[in-house]
Image (cartoon, rainbow, N blue to C red; front, side):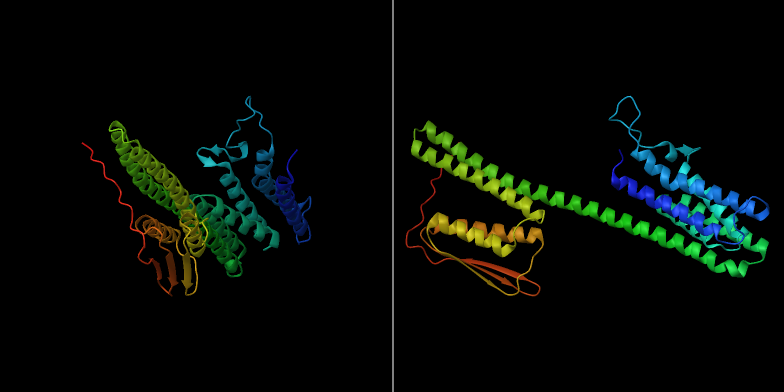
Length: 354
């Protein structure tokens, strides 16, 4: 059973074809079985068949279940889209539709259905095919109008129609080019984001892993010297580095994907973490009109504040801290301060590596 999402376009396109036939039947000369009416009937029938093949058959072909031996494999090019001598069938059908529309326009002396079909086919060629291929269809339509107008002596009357066909081609092709440009820019933005994420994670992991390696190597030497307490301290530091490195990597990915909280909220989280770990206050003061900064800028500021608060905890134990964030019209300033600690910082023992 075909999904409603696939049935709706089929119904709409069939409705447009039926409307074209209905409007054509109300014009003079109307479709008939003799004389000019027979010519109108044949041209209208040819146009309807071609439009059905171009508009409806592609949807029916893609909606049909696979008929190959493997039900999971379907041909990417259904029969209606295959090539004839290197030319897509759809392009050939559009060319035939343009010729039929031009001939119908000449016979009906500028009937609206023929004009609409002609402009639609030219626009469809410009939207779906390359510049050279679509230009052939456009020139075919213009040349057919010029020849038909010259034969009937209505060149000045059909000049506006010729200009309309040219304008339709130019507008449709330019819209297609703009869409392709936006798609290319989106792909470049994705690649740039991936590059930033990879570079940021590389820096974080390189720093974290190298520091862990130093601590683990020191722990190995301390264990050989039977200094187990100091060796355990080095292992704990290596574990803390691994934990903080993982958190920074997650924060980097979140920030660069623009899913991270705003900068003030991120700084508030760091301040709460500082207060929870040290049992000391960490005030946060924000001034100026708050706004979102580029993801990489916010990430750099968050990492700077995190490093500063870590230094306060390490080198000024027992000291409170204060974080100030100021927004200007074209700048942003971050300041982390703390008073002198009453308790001296604990010296980090160094281990000689031969």
